[in-house]
Amino acid sequence: MKFRLALLLALALILPGCSETASTPEVPLPAYVLAIDRFDESTGMWMVALATESNDEKELRALVENTRALAKDKKEEINSVSVTIIKPDGRIPSTITAFGRIALTSKGMEQTGLSSTSEMVFEYRNAPAASPEQPPTTPAKETAK
Image (cartoon, rainbow, N blue to C red; front, side):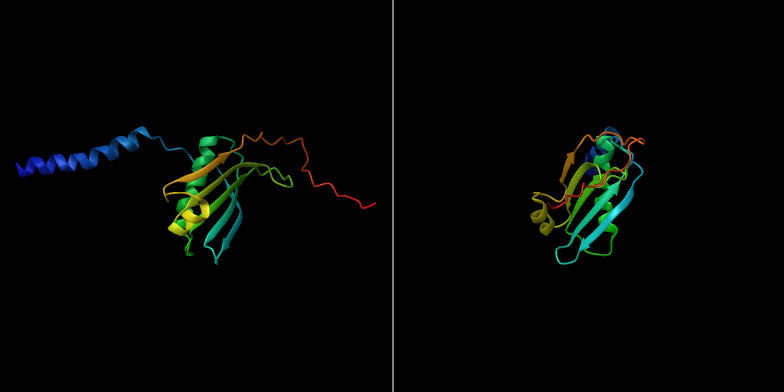
């Protein structure tokens, strides 16, 4: 009887994990470059800009979520991560395709406005693909009269 109870308990703990991984396909990370990497020691906030050609919302969301793992691998204690995803189109300012915020600690939850460290804020902007024919733009200069 104890063996059956132990077996049922083990199956109850193992099987939900199997079904979750089987029903959630892994979204591949797009190729990206870390364009900006700033860490504020006084607040524990890590601000990054990732440059990628991808415009796929699921891939960009996965890229923002991936910064959680990158933050945990850093030697500094990071409370929150602010992610900006840009197109490597040479424009000034860069074309922004997505924003994200992640909290890693309770202080990070205060900084981001999130109620849990497992949550993520993600804002997708459907930016058009960069056109190779268009030259990079620069801000117009004003002249005083």
